[in-house]
Image (cartoon, rainbow over all chains, first blue to last red; front, side):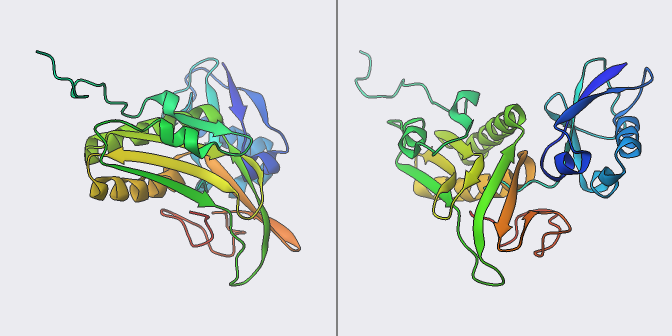
Length: 81
Length: 169
């Protein structure tokens, strides 16, 4: 199963890219994906615990199951306005 | 006989089309126009502007980044919530991204309501929730460095809810 990952703000700087694809086992959850991303980019290790996660433009919890082609985004603390 | 007033005019509410993320200066009159309505007895147009800080360092400029499609969805959902909760006529907002200089507007929020109290309260609530739930990030640039607001590198501390004083709004 492949999901698309996009990075913003300090997560983008830590991962040194705007996005990438991530291959996961069928049935993988949001937590599985985030753990895999932190293994791939250790600099995300300090960011992931503070970040929320959005899948297909909606905030989701760590146990949410991912679907093929989903777009997953780490949402570090926001600061609009 | 049909009333000649606006009684049957549709309420604009907070459609997704009233929320935008833009890369250039915000057309505040355009945001205001989205909430004008004959049922409105109050129209509030809030400008959140970039300011330099006097406390511990001088901000040279800000850099905003957005997850645009989700930011628009979240602002629209927030606007719809406020319409319901406060009995508003309409909500519209535009947030700017990219580099902003002191004095420039980062966000313009327009809210109309039958009476001012609801509109004023809703403006504040919109901003509080914008800073919590809308995927827009701010990097503060100052002499000698830059920091993403809300991160541990932010000298104002990690934010876990409403914003600290470093925010523009």
